[in-house]
Length: 338
Ligand code: SF4
Ligand code: MG
Image (cartoon, rainbow, N blue to C red; front, side, top):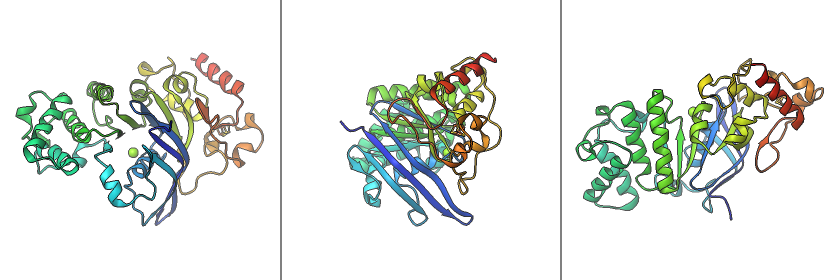
């Protein structure tokens, strides 16, 4: 059977005054219901743009988009504004880093959650209010009856994030896109929110795309991981595969920036030197080659000229010319050095 969400060869370019930004290039992935895919990368790696494309939130006037995004049998690329509008909230919902950008300061949280529900179900105001109270309870807000008429500013940061999750899930979406949902929160609250998402996923069978620059978040909250670099997937697999035996030199670098305590392997590796490339001038060949220490090993000139594809197509894959034995040996050597 077809995966619940299937993205194939997605390419997103958009025009700016400085030139064309190649934000996403040839990206493919699948997600099944009830599972979480962590998309990891530095800022500017294309991870947020990917999700705006899934949601149809890019501006068509400035954006070129190609490939396939099939959600539960429906092709989203080329779908009309109206169709996408209907899907958002109902079938696909999103939460962002900062709840204050999604929540209006002028309306009570009950009103906002209720309106989302009414818009997609046509429920009465009274029913929508009941539903809002139910959702506030489900996301762990104590005494929801007495909080439903409060305004967003009357909640703490963590509680506001819960309100936003309640609003996102009020119509029982099949897919939730969470873009850095816990970045602004302290570590304890962050863990609570990730636990909450996990519990709700178990109850509702939601598929989740979790976008983050933090491998620690992925370790605790995702089933599968996609590592993005310069708009491309450079490694993909289960959390155990990618974090336990990473194969791509860029992933080794990301592991180095994990705080020691949450590292899946108990060692910091050597951080990646240099900075991510501009998406206007993506380097030819392997986009990582200007920062990579292993180009000589892969064969003279190869990395700078030919773009490596993600392989194999299923399971643990990576886009790097080093041989499997080289990748294994270098990683083990790095682990040993510490
Ligand atoms: Fe480094 Fe070459 Fe592998 Fe790219 S393909 S990560 S440049 S060794
Ligand atoms: Mg982002």
